[in-house]
Image (cartoon, rainbow, N blue to C red; front, side, top):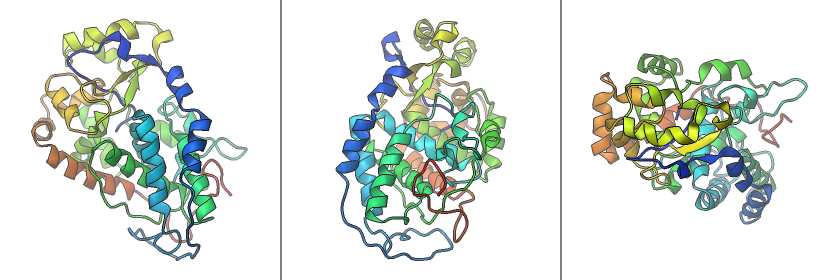
Length: 345
């Protein structure tokens, strides 16, 4: 779940790499408007003051909140499976910068430098229109009750579950930040060239253990990555040469190909499973940082376990997602409940 997503198998023909602009066109605003309309229902409007995260935070103030998010996310993922990885990544990129406060969703303004323009996020993060649609639906149902930060947390859970992955109890009650942190996004998100020790430290800085890091990396079992983030890895020694050779033609050496995409897990690109770890055993980790998890280091034993015991991976991933979702949330009277996730009220 680091900065990018990509899939691997025994071979990836150049046809599997596609231009990111083509992917962007498929996510039209009309599509999200359609799934937004399909979710509208009635909801109670009683508020409950909470000072800490709890699984039933919206049971009175917006009892259909989770159902609404689930309906919209699962519809979107059904029509475009890649959206699942995009929503998990949005939650990750949010929590690793100032905590899980929806700061990643803020647009530029006269007082805000958006995190969307940070190097790890620019031309890379997606799914904002779907979050907008979910927020608009919830504002109709329960105005001013459901935070954008909670939407991100629940949407990540629903994305994984929709693609046959595990589910977990999302603790709720986060509030939304009034600020963004572009410099933090540039420094706190682990890049695809990190070593194992650098990855370990990056996660430790956020209160996540070594085991959490290895489990959360399993989010790379779906999604895609751009050539610019794995081109250098194709010439390294810790990658299967046949696998690397299948990727070079479409990536080339020109920056003109930087935004070409490939699956993080070509064996089962539209399923959340443990294939990511099997790929690592075969030196088919797309990103340098992926293959670092199985390169003669301390993570090798965990990778082997996850590759043969998917239930263990699912359990550890779910627990790590709960832990990550609790990084420095705003609660009580801190922050606000944004009416529009892209700007403060």
